Image 1 (cartoon, helix red, strand yellow):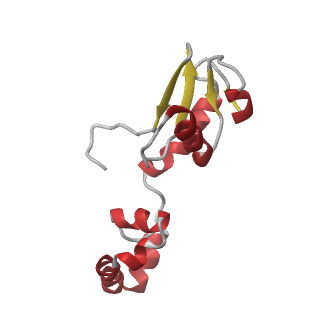
Image 2 (cartoon, rainbow, N blue to C red; image 1 turned 90 degrees about the vertical axis):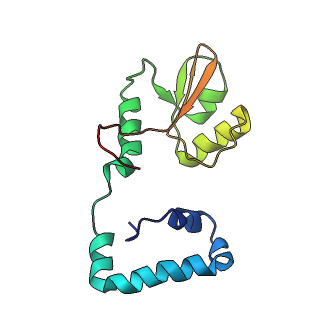
Length: 134
């Protein structure tokens, strides 16, 4: 875990060249790290993931139990027919399928691609509570 919550962190992880194009943001983040000090940086990097960061794998485990009435199937089987199914794939393959076959154009990762009655459903797992969050 990166020790600072900032939306630019994920952006920089995805697009390494963005670091060079955003020197002021890099300076701001570096300044925050220097202010924290090494002990705090280490402590924050060692903290467990937040629940909302763990939910994707838990959701996949739930899908693999057949909770939706269909067993997840590999990519080749999923694209070879029109039967009800859930695509059993990692983040990149879910995104690839949605982009190539469903004209999905968002950058947000997916946790779910399914087909029911010849209609496709895509989604992201979220942990809902009555408390605030991001």
